[in-house]
Image (cartoon, rainbow, N blue to C red):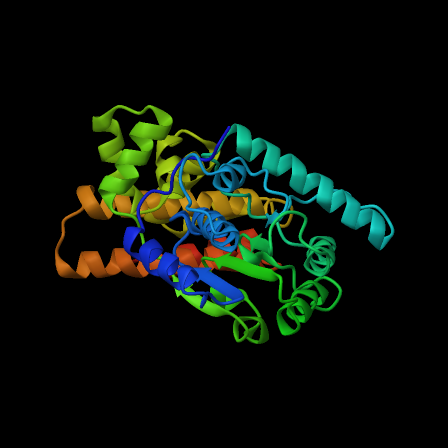
Length: 351
Protein backbone atom coordinates (compact mmCIF):
# COMPACT_ATOMS: atom_id res chain seq x y z
CA UNK A 1 0.00 0.00 0.00
CA UNK A 2 1.20 3.51 -0.78
CA UNK A 3 1.37 6.23 1.83
CA UNK A 4 -1.37 8.83 1.60
CA UNK A 5 -0.69 12.35 0.39
CA UNK A 6 0.72 14.91 2.77
CA UNK A 7 -2.03 16.92 4.45
CA UNK A 8 -1.39 20.61 5.07
CA UNK A 9 1.96 22.44 5.15
CA UNK A 10 1.54 23.71 1.58
CA UNK A 11 3.46 26.95 2.13
CA UNK A 12 6.34 25.16 3.86
CA UNK A 13 6.58 22.50 1.17
CA UNK A 14 6.49 25.06 -1.63
CA UNK A 15 9.40 26.88 0.01
CA UNK A 16 11.39 23.68 0.53
CA UNK A 17 10.66 22.48 -3.02
CA UNK A 18 12.10 25.75 -4.30
CA UNK A 19 15.22 25.24 -2.19
CA UNK A 20 15.67 21.74 -3.61
CA UNK A 21 15.12 22.95 -7.18
CA UNK A 22 17.85 25.58 -6.69
CA UNK A 23 20.30 22.99 -5.36
CA UNK A 24 20.58 24.77 -2.00
CA UNK A 25 18.89 22.22 0.26
CA UNK A 26 21.02 21.56 3.41
CA UNK A 27 22.74 18.23 3.86
CA UNK A 28 21.62 17.79 7.49
CA UNK A 29 18.20 19.03 8.64
CA UNK A 30 16.16 18.94 11.85
CA UNK A 31 12.38 19.15 11.41
CA UNK A 32 10.88 20.34 14.69
CA UNK A 33 7.32 20.92 15.80
CA UNK A 34 4.53 19.48 17.93
CA UNK A 35 3.98 15.73 18.00
CA UNK A 36 1.72 14.30 15.35
CA UNK A 37 1.75 17.16 12.83
CA UNK A 38 3.42 15.20 10.01
CA UNK A 39 7.16 15.85 10.42
CA UNK A 40 8.16 12.36 9.29
CA UNK A 41 5.69 12.49 6.42
CA UNK A 42 7.31 15.78 5.38
CA UNK A 43 10.68 14.01 5.55
CA UNK A 44 9.42 11.33 3.18
CA UNK A 45 8.05 13.96 0.82
CA UNK A 46 11.42 15.73 0.87
CA UNK A 47 13.13 12.44 -0.01
CA UNK A 48 10.78 12.09 -2.96
CA UNK A 49 11.58 15.62 -4.18
CA UNK A 50 15.33 15.15 -3.70
CA UNK A 51 15.44 11.88 -5.64
CA UNK A 52 13.32 13.32 -8.48
CA UNK A 53 15.45 16.47 -8.63
CA UNK A 54 18.65 14.43 -8.91
CA UNK A 55 17.05 12.31 -11.62
CA UNK A 56 15.81 15.35 -13.53
CA UNK A 57 12.23 14.07 -13.45
CA UNK A 58 9.03 15.82 -12.41
CA UNK A 59 7.52 14.41 -9.17
CA UNK A 60 3.92 13.34 -9.47
CA UNK A 61 1.52 10.42 -8.97
CA UNK A 62 2.87 8.53 -12.01
CA UNK A 63 6.55 9.20 -11.39
CA UNK A 64 8.38 5.89 -10.87
CA UNK A 65 10.75 7.29 -8.24
CA UNK A 66 7.98 9.04 -6.32
CA UNK A 67 5.94 5.83 -6.29
CA UNK A 68 8.90 3.94 -4.85
CA UNK A 69 9.14 6.43 -2.00
CA UNK A 70 5.41 6.40 -1.29
CA UNK A 71 5.49 2.61 -1.18
CA UNK A 72 8.56 2.76 1.13
CA UNK A 73 10.44 0.69 -1.41
CA UNK A 74 13.14 3.04 -2.64
CA UNK A 75 16.50 1.33 -2.04
CA UNK A 76 18.24 4.58 -1.09
CA UNK A 77 15.64 5.74 1.42
CA UNK A 78 16.41 4.60 4.96
CA UNK A 79 13.83 5.33 7.67
CA UNK A 80 14.98 4.91 11.26
CA UNK A 81 12.19 4.55 13.81
CA UNK A 82 12.52 4.15 17.60
CA UNK A 83 12.50 0.45 18.45
CA UNK A 84 10.60 -1.10 21.37
CA UNK A 85 12.45 -2.60 24.28
CA UNK A 86 13.40 -6.21 23.88
CA UNK A 87 16.04 -8.78 24.66
CA UNK A 88 19.30 -8.01 22.89
CA UNK A 89 21.92 -10.51 21.80
CA UNK A 90 25.54 -10.33 22.79
CA UNK A 91 27.85 -8.90 20.18
CA UNK A 92 27.62 -5.60 18.31
CA UNK A 93 27.19 -7.16 14.84
CA UNK A 94 24.32 -9.35 16.01
CA UNK A 95 22.59 -6.37 17.64
CA UNK A 96 22.88 -4.36 14.41
CA UNK A 97 21.37 -7.27 12.48
CA UNK A 98 18.48 -7.46 14.95
CA UNK A 99 17.89 -3.70 14.70
CA UNK A 100 17.79 -3.96 10.90
CA UNK A 101 15.25 -6.78 11.07
CA UNK A 102 13.09 -4.89 13.59
CA UNK A 103 13.09 -1.76 11.42
CA UNK A 104 12.08 -3.83 8.38
CA UNK A 105 9.10 -5.24 10.30
CA UNK A 106 7.94 -1.76 11.36
CA UNK A 107 8.25 -0.45 7.78
CA UNK A 108 6.25 -3.45 6.56
CA UNK A 109 3.51 -2.62 9.05
CA UNK A 110 3.50 1.04 8.02
CA UNK A 111 3.03 0.02 4.39
CA UNK A 112 -0.01 -1.96 5.51
CA UNK A 113 -1.34 0.76 7.82
CA UNK A 114 -0.06 4.25 6.86
CA UNK A 115 -2.07 5.90 9.67
CA UNK A 116 -0.10 4.69 12.65
CA UNK A 117 -0.18 5.52 16.34
CA UNK A 118 2.88 7.01 18.09
CA UNK A 119 5.54 4.63 19.36
CA UNK A 120 5.27 3.77 23.04
CA UNK A 121 7.27 5.72 25.58
CA UNK A 122 9.86 2.97 26.00
CA UNK A 123 10.86 2.85 22.32
CA UNK A 124 14.23 4.40 21.50
CA UNK A 125 17.16 4.67 19.09
CA UNK A 126 19.74 2.43 20.66
CA UNK A 127 23.43 2.12 19.86
CA UNK A 128 22.76 -0.73 17.41
CA UNK A 129 20.43 1.45 15.31
CA UNK A 130 22.97 4.26 15.14
CA UNK A 131 25.73 1.81 14.21
CA UNK A 132 23.49 0.66 11.37
CA UNK A 133 22.93 4.29 10.35
CA UNK A 134 26.70 4.83 10.37
CA UNK A 135 27.19 1.85 8.05
CA UNK A 136 24.49 3.03 5.64
CA UNK A 137 25.98 6.52 5.52
CA UNK A 138 29.23 5.01 4.28
CA UNK A 139 27.88 2.86 1.43
CA UNK A 140 27.39 3.89 -2.20
CA UNK A 141 23.78 4.66 -3.23
CA UNK A 142 22.18 1.75 -5.02
CA UNK A 143 19.91 3.58 -7.48
CA UNK A 144 19.90 7.33 -6.88
CA UNK A 145 22.71 9.87 -6.70
CA UNK A 146 22.28 10.15 -2.94
CA UNK A 147 21.01 8.30 0.10
CA UNK A 148 18.33 9.93 2.25
CA UNK A 149 18.35 8.87 5.90
CA UNK A 150 15.24 9.85 7.88
CA UNK A 151 15.53 9.59 11.67
CA UNK A 152 12.11 9.90 13.28
CA UNK A 153 11.84 11.11 16.89
CA UNK A 154 15.59 11.71 17.04
CA UNK A 155 15.27 12.91 20.65
CA UNK A 156 14.75 9.27 21.63
CA UNK A 157 18.43 8.53 21.46
CA UNK A 158 19.27 6.66 24.64
CA UNK A 159 21.92 8.84 26.23
CA UNK A 160 22.25 6.69 29.33
CA UNK A 161 23.46 3.74 27.28
CA UNK A 162 27.25 3.30 27.01
CA UNK A 163 27.96 6.85 28.17
CA UNK A 164 25.99 8.58 25.41
CA UNK A 165 27.42 6.29 22.74
CA UNK A 166 24.28 6.44 20.59
CA UNK A 167 24.24 10.23 20.46
CA UNK A 168 27.99 10.41 19.95
CA UNK A 169 27.84 7.89 17.10
CA UNK A 170 25.25 10.08 15.38
CA UNK A 171 27.47 13.09 15.97
CA UNK A 172 30.29 11.40 14.03
CA UNK A 173 27.99 11.03 11.01
CA UNK A 174 26.97 14.69 11.26
CA UNK A 175 30.55 15.93 11.60
CA UNK A 176 31.82 14.07 8.54
CA UNK A 177 28.83 13.37 6.27
CA UNK A 178 29.59 11.77 2.94
CA UNK A 179 28.65 14.03 -0.01
CA UNK A 180 26.03 11.55 -1.21
CA UNK A 181 24.11 11.42 2.09
CA UNK A 182 21.23 13.68 3.19
CA UNK A 183 20.16 13.39 6.83
CA UNK A 184 16.64 14.38 7.89
CA UNK A 185 15.95 14.24 11.64
CA UNK A 186 12.60 14.96 13.28
CA UNK A 187 11.82 15.86 16.87
CA UNK A 188 8.99 17.28 18.94
CA UNK A 189 11.43 17.79 21.82
CA UNK A 190 14.65 19.14 20.25
CA UNK A 191 16.02 20.27 23.63
CA UNK A 192 16.50 16.59 24.45
CA UNK A 193 19.13 16.34 21.69
CA UNK A 194 22.72 17.02 22.62
CA UNK A 195 23.64 20.66 21.84
CA UNK A 196 26.55 19.37 19.76
CA UNK A 197 24.09 17.43 17.60
CA UNK A 198 21.65 20.35 17.23
CA UNK A 199 24.44 22.74 16.26
CA UNK A 200 25.21 20.67 13.15
CA UNK A 201 21.63 20.69 11.86
CA UNK A 202 19.65 23.30 9.97
CA UNK A 203 16.37 23.64 11.86
CA UNK A 204 13.08 23.78 9.95
CA UNK A 205 10.01 24.48 12.04
CA UNK A 206 6.77 22.64 11.27
CA UNK A 207 3.50 24.12 12.54
CA UNK A 208 0.26 22.51 13.56
CA UNK A 209 -2.38 21.47 11.07
CA UNK A 210 -5.63 23.39 10.84
CA UNK A 211 -8.79 21.79 12.18
CA UNK A 212 -10.00 21.48 8.59
CA UNK A 213 -6.87 19.60 7.52
CA UNK A 214 -7.18 17.16 10.43
CA UNK A 215 -10.86 16.68 9.64
CA UNK A 216 -10.12 16.02 5.96
CA UNK A 217 -7.55 13.35 6.81
CA UNK A 218 -9.90 11.60 9.23
CA UNK A 219 -12.69 11.53 6.65
CA UNK A 220 -10.55 10.64 3.63
CA UNK A 221 -8.11 8.16 5.14
CA UNK A 222 -10.14 6.64 7.99
CA UNK A 223 -13.63 6.85 6.53
CA UNK A 224 -14.94 8.80 9.51
CA UNK A 225 -18.23 10.65 9.28
CA UNK A 226 -17.76 14.36 8.73
CA UNK A 227 -19.55 15.42 11.94
CA UNK A 228 -17.52 13.09 14.14
CA UNK A 229 -14.29 14.06 12.37
CA UNK A 230 -15.06 17.73 12.97
CA UNK A 231 -15.59 17.14 16.69
CA UNK A 232 -12.33 15.20 17.01
CA UNK A 233 -10.38 17.74 14.94
CA UNK A 234 -11.36 20.55 17.32
CA UNK A 235 -9.96 18.57 20.25
CA UNK A 236 -6.84 17.42 18.41
CA UNK A 237 -5.10 20.82 18.49
CA UNK A 238 -3.67 20.36 15.00
CA UNK A 239 -2.12 16.96 15.75
CA UNK A 240 -2.99 13.67 14.06
CA UNK A 241 -1.68 11.67 17.02
CA UNK A 242 -3.98 13.67 19.30
CA UNK A 243 -6.84 12.95 16.91
CA UNK A 244 -6.13 9.22 17.07
CA UNK A 245 -5.99 9.40 20.87
CA UNK A 246 -9.38 11.13 20.94
CA UNK A 247 -10.82 8.60 18.50
CA UNK A 248 -9.59 5.75 20.67
CA UNK A 249 -10.85 7.46 23.80
CA UNK A 250 -11.84 4.23 25.49
CA UNK A 251 -8.28 2.92 25.60
CA UNK A 252 -6.31 2.23 28.75
CA UNK A 253 -4.45 5.55 28.70
CA UNK A 254 -7.68 7.53 28.47
CA UNK A 255 -9.28 5.62 31.32
CA UNK A 256 -6.17 6.09 33.45
CA UNK A 257 -6.11 9.83 32.70
CA UNK A 258 -9.74 10.30 33.70
CA UNK A 259 -9.18 8.31 36.87
CA UNK A 260 -6.09 10.36 37.73
CA UNK A 261 -7.80 13.69 37.03
CA UNK A 262 -10.73 12.70 39.24
CA UNK A 263 -8.31 11.74 42.01
CA UNK A 264 -6.48 15.09 41.71
CA UNK A 265 -9.75 16.96 42.22
CA UNK A 266 -10.66 14.86 45.23
CA UNK A 267 -7.43 15.78 46.99
CA UNK A 268 -4.17 14.23 48.25
CA UNK A 269 -5.91 11.31 49.95
CA UNK A 270 -7.13 10.17 46.53
CA UNK A 271 -4.22 11.00 44.22
CA UNK A 272 -1.58 9.51 46.56
CA UNK A 273 -3.33 6.18 46.28
CA UNK A 274 -3.64 6.53 42.50
CA UNK A 275 0.08 7.30 42.20
CA UNK A 276 0.98 4.23 44.27
CA UNK A 277 -1.04 2.03 41.90
CA UNK A 278 1.23 3.08 39.02
CA UNK A 279 4.01 0.50 38.43
CA UNK A 280 7.22 2.29 39.44
CA UNK A 281 9.77 1.43 36.74
CA UNK A 282 8.61 -1.04 34.12
CA UNK A 283 5.66 0.87 32.73
CA UNK A 284 6.95 4.24 31.56
CA UNK A 285 5.25 3.59 28.19
CA UNK A 286 1.87 3.26 29.87
CA UNK A 287 2.61 6.33 31.99
CA UNK A 288 3.41 8.35 28.86
CA UNK A 289 0.14 7.18 27.26
CA UNK A 290 -1.75 8.35 30.35
CA UNK A 291 -0.09 11.77 30.15
CA UNK A 292 -0.92 12.06 26.45
CA UNK A 293 -4.56 11.31 27.20
CA UNK A 294 -4.53 13.68 30.19
CA UNK A 295 -3.40 16.54 27.94
CA UNK A 296 -6.22 15.81 25.51
CA UNK A 297 -8.73 15.69 28.37
CA UNK A 298 -7.56 19.06 29.74
CA UNK A 299 -7.75 20.65 26.29
CA UNK A 300 -11.27 19.28 25.87
CA UNK A 301 -12.38 20.79 29.17
CA UNK A 302 -10.71 24.09 28.34
CA UNK A 303 -12.48 24.31 24.99
CA UNK A 304 -15.95 23.35 26.02
CA UNK A 305 -16.60 22.38 29.59
CA UNK A 306 -15.22 25.07 31.85
CA UNK A 307 -16.08 28.65 32.70
CA UNK A 308 -13.70 30.72 30.57
CA UNK A 309 -12.82 33.43 33.04
CA UNK A 310 -9.20 34.51 32.84
CA UNK A 311 -7.82 32.84 36.01
CA UNK A 312 -9.41 29.53 35.04
CA UNK A 313 -7.89 29.61 31.57
CA UNK A 314 -4.48 30.43 33.04
CA UNK A 315 -4.79 27.49 35.43
CA UNK A 316 -5.52 25.08 32.58
CA UNK A 317 -2.63 26.40 30.52
CA UNK A 318 -0.34 25.99 33.53
CA UNK A 319 -1.56 22.43 34.01
CA UNK A 320 -1.00 21.60 30.32
CA UNK A 321 2.55 22.94 30.51
CA UNK A 322 3.28 20.80 33.57
CA UNK A 323 1.85 17.71 31.88
CA UNK A 324 4.12 18.31 28.87
CA UNK A 325 7.16 18.71 31.13
CA UNK A 326 6.42 15.42 32.87
CA UNK A 327 5.77 13.78 29.49
CA UNK A 328 9.24 14.84 28.33
CA UNK A 329 10.73 13.37 31.51
CA UNK A 330 9.49 9.89 30.51
CA UNK A 331 12.43 9.76 28.10
CA UNK A 332 14.74 9.68 31.10
CA UNK A 333 14.95 7.15 33.90
CA UNK A 334 12.03 8.69 35.78
CA UNK A 335 9.96 6.95 38.48
CA UNK A 336 6.31 7.20 37.30
CA UNK A 337 4.98 6.99 40.88
CA UNK A 338 7.04 9.97 42.00
CA UNK A 339 6.29 11.89 38.82
CA UNK A 340 2.54 11.38 39.26
CA UNK A 341 2.73 12.60 42.86
CA UNK A 342 4.69 15.73 41.90
CA UNK A 343 2.30 16.49 39.02
CA UNK A 344 -0.80 16.03 41.16
CA UNK A 345 0.63 18.21 43.91
CA UNK A 346 1.54 20.95 41.41
CA UNK A 347 -1.82 21.24 39.67
CA UNK A 348 -4.19 19.95 42.34
CA UNK A 349 -5.14 23.39 43.64
CA UNK A 350 -5.73 24.93 40.22
CA UNK A 351 -8.22 22.49 38.76
